[in-house]
Image 1 (tube, helix red, strand yellow):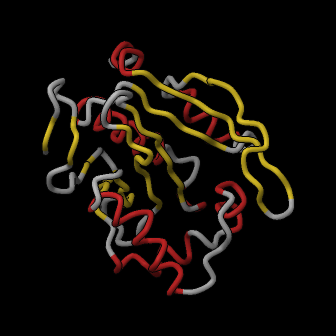
Image 2: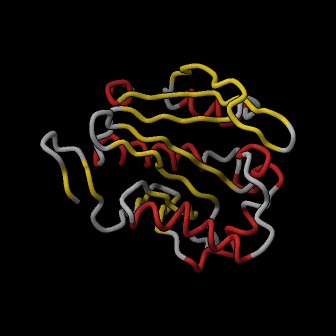
Amino acid sequence: MQTDETGRTVEFGEFPELETKRLILRRMTLADAEFYLKHFSDPDIVELTAFDALGNIERATQELLEFCIKPFEENRGIRWGIVLKGEAELAGTIGYHQWVRTGGYHARVGYDLAAVHRRRGVMTEALEAVLRYGFETMRLNKVEACTDPRNVASIRLLEKLGFHRDGVLRESTYFHGRFIDEAVFSLLAREWRNGQP
């Protein structure tokens, strides 16, 4: 891992696998394409991410490369696959994109979880680990998150972990014949540190 004069991460080293009490956050590979196809064809995930269902394994493979594998290889971001210990299949994904390494020292976090694993604290546990990595290892000053204002569960998660609502990007996305707002949240490093036990 390379850092700049402030000690902040500017380049990743080896892929960092993260472990929590119940979870392993691991590197995603092309072997995850079947999961990716099924996961990102779920109607709830399609609706709340405003990305069309994938439709076939070729497109799933292409998007897996574009959004989960290449960002790390090209030092633009990082995406983990979420695995519950003792289970083989991924439960979801989480990671950083739009990483600003100089000047702003911030990144945007995104996450998704299969319906069967929701309301069990899985994403809370995963996001806590990813925030710790972002603030302690990447030394981000700010983590941003954007979510559909209708996604009550996502908003509750962000607020629970100390994110502040910055505002709404009105009609920022056009999807399936209508414009969609995005609710914008952020968490600063000092706020995260103050909220740690």
